[in-house]
Image 1 (tube, rainbow, N blue to C red):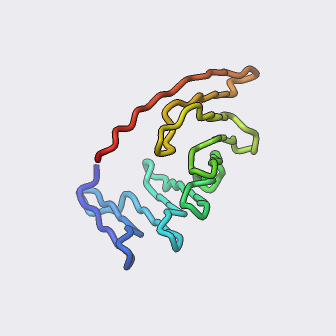
Image 2 (tube, rainbow, N blue to C red):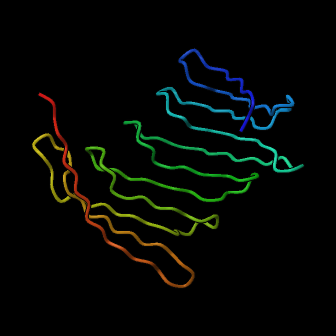
Length: 153
């Protein structure tokens, strides 16, 4: 837990840098963030000490015109750890998310089917199918999700 942190903000009020210091005043963590013109967080970099070694992570995200995240890549110490992609329908409902390993092959996939909508167009029932690679076999699961939205008059 840091003793002190110093943040810098852009003119839109977004935090663009945060430095965290230990109780002895030594910098322990540095975060740098970039945003696109719509205010979406597109890059987040983090440098930190792991014992005597400086480590880093970097997350790069892309968004569609509606501001929905469509892809995210995580790099650890400069190497791609994984990539995630998301697809949406024309109403902004999530249709699919896929996680890829560092070699580019899919390791997890979720597919969403919306079975029921209320009078406002919000889904009330959905079926989610998941596939996760586990060694040479796949773990497959299907779930049904229900939600009820109460609207204020």
